[in-house]
Image (cartoon, rainbow, N blue to C red; front, side, top):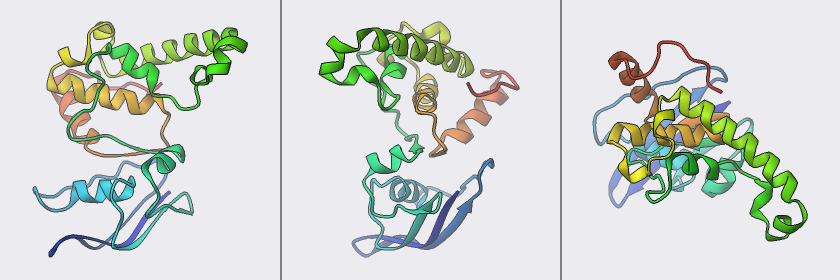
Length: 195
């Protein structure tokens, strides 16, 4: 599903990535472990298009994506979470989720007048989906809270929930370790199916 071959990225004279190769198969969970400064975030930034590689190749579902802009990579279904959550602070938790899905009918000005019934139907379906995802990440009780009011851990869960709203084919970032830790602390139930 995702292949990284001989990736290199330097910042001045410092090589953050050198000969990095990996493969992620569909239906698997792949972890990337290393100390601070090992290049994990740089790798995620290059894969997701935030940084361009100096050398190497990245393919996603057989399509070459290295050097592509982040929005094109996201449209293919490769999404990422960030170490520092980037929720919209002055919007509620639910509103943050409602903004995330792509290709919403209400995004076009003309549609506001001509397709308002369809917009209302889609918005109702998105709200239902958002509520299921908030249940999954154990934030449903905070749906009306502003994102700026959340704790650091809750902001990480909001970040994960936002990405899930976009129905990714693959996610890259620091979300997996977070889920494992939360599950160990009893914040998330043992087994839940992602909506």
